Amino acid sequence: MSTIRENIERIRENIAEAALRSGRDPSDIRLMGVTKTVDDSKIMEAIDCGIDIIGENYVQEGKRKIEKMGKTLEWHMIGHLQTNKAKYVVSLFDMIHSVDRMKLARELDKKSREAGCITKILIEVNVSGEETKNGVPKDKAVDLVKEIASLENLSIQGLMTMPPWFDDPEDARPYFVALRELRDKIVDENIEGVEMAELSMGMSGDFTVAVEEGATIVRVGRAIFGERTY
Ligand SMILES: *Cc1c(COP(=O)(O)O)cnc(C)c1O
Image (tube, rainbow, N blue to C red; front, side, top):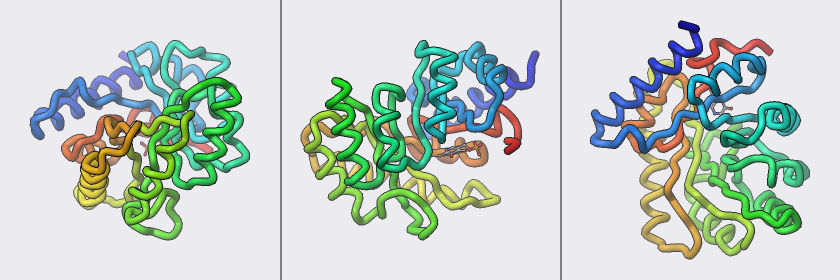
C-alpha cells in the first residue's frame, strides 16, 4: 500500500475516533487535502483514495491544477486573497475560505454577478488576535457577516480559522472552542441568507482536537503528503 493511501486511511480513522469521542457522526466531517507545492501525481493519487475536496492557497497554481484535473471534485481556495484576484477565483473555486474584509467581499460579489454565479464563502476569523494573522478580529466578525449577508451573489456557509502554531495541539483547543461559540452566536442572530453549517478548522497537527470541538472541514496537508518542499 502506498504511503499516501496509508496516511489518508489513518487520518480518516483518527477523525472517526475523535468524532465518536465527542458524540458526533464521523460522516459530518470532511477531509480536505491541502496541496500547495504538492506534485500533481501525488494529488491524483489522493483523489484516487477518495479525497474529494482539495484546498489551494495560490490562485495561479490552483487554476492550473483545476484545469488539468477537472471539476469532478471540489476545489476550495484557502489562502489569503488579494482583492484584485477576485475575478480569477469566482466560478473557478467551489468555496472561498478566506473572506475577511468587506472590500474583498464586494469585489467577489461583483465578479460573481458578472459571471452569473453565486459564490460560497466562509468568513476567516483571527481568533488569537495576532497581528500577523489574516482574518477579521473576533469582535468584528458579527458585523462583517451582517454586512456581507446583504450581497446577493455571495452565500456565507460558515467560519474558518487558523490558530497560532503550538507544539501541543491541546493548546489550540481554546481557539477552536472560540470559533464554535462565535458560530453559535451568529446562528442566534438569525441573519437572513446566512448558513453556519461549516466550521473549517484543524490542520495536520491538531485536526483531532478540532473535530472534538466541532470542525466540519479539516484542512490537512503534511500528514497526507509529507513535508512540503518549496
Ligand atoms: C498549508 C495550510 C494548511 C495545511 O497545513 P498542514 O500543516 O500541512 O496540514 C491548512 N490551512 C491553511 C490555510 C494552509 O495554508
